[in-house]
Amino acid sequence: MKRHQQPGPVPPPAGPGPWIPEESAQTLLVTGVDVLRNEVERIVAAAGGQLRTVQDVADAGPFWDAAAAVLVGSDIRELPLRRRAPAVLVGLKGEGDGLWQLAAAIGAERVAVLPDAAAWLADYLSRSRAPEAGGLVVGVTGGCGGAGATTAAVWIAQAAAGLGVRVLLVDGDPWGGGLELALAAEDAPGLRWPDLAGASGSIDPAELDDALPTAGGFSFLSWQGTRDGAAGVDATTVAGVLDAARRGCELVVLDIGRGREALRSFAWECDRIVIVAPARLRAAVATARLLQELPPVDTALVVRASPGAALDAPLIAESVGLPLHGILPEIKGLAAATELGRLLEAGRQRGVRRCVAGLLDLDWGDLP
Image (cartoon, rainbow, N blue to C red):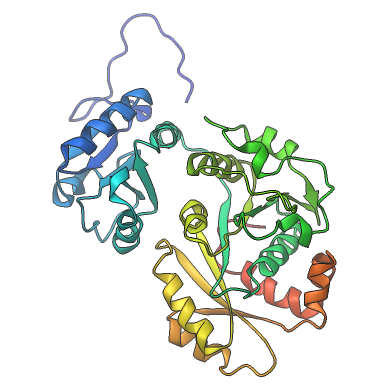
């Protein structure tokens, strides 16, 4: 809110307690580890914020929902049952895989590994004090290899764009061969992931959108569909790009991939996740294992129809403990269409549109 200067002192509003301007909302840190507290104090100071530190969840309760952001240390083993503000799990580099497993177990929405993620965390805290309206980030991954996650991601982006939604489709698998090939858009002008390697700081959403290629009525960000090795893009860069994408689009569709690094970099940025799995026993087992690596966000199952399937879709959903939200129909010649870059043409078929329309009818925020 814009304040106009007035002559003379301005008295604080009546009522108990000190008057604290809205923009001075604090960051809450819950940890009993001195090293973590010192790291976070330095980051919050660099972000120009205020920090309140408590040692355990019981002490955090009165401050949780009023905080601009909540950080919990890796020594914390549970979160309050009823809370509004999301939590970021902060840990140290040497703690390894256990950080993501702990985040999934306690329900933390993000993971920040310090000191590597210091720049990302400072930017996150700065934005948390003045949040902007942002779009929805939906991740799509396969319950097993070859499940059809990329196909589903393309069709979801295509269908949403057809409804007039501003969509960005993001390729999250550097070893997947390049999403641009499935779109027959390898020659479309615009940035690819290697062009963004080393990008730091806040990225302007409009500039990012202008720099990306388009296909099928939506923008996309792909790894290159060439034989060249995939250039590394660190987690901080990924987080910055996806933050700009969220601020600039109504819907961001992430083709996550199944590699551990891809899951950590992309899945933990998602508000919703869709898992695609064929109706087969091994796929159900693999899907159940995958769930242990995913963040605690709303997750839906889409079963891919296939000839000679050993299990039906409801049984697959029941066995993995996920709600069934669609059956991806068998499309004759789909493999050839994918190889020839005709995936968007296949997405116009009635059965595909019916399945994807059901997904878009989920509680996915304020999509048109």
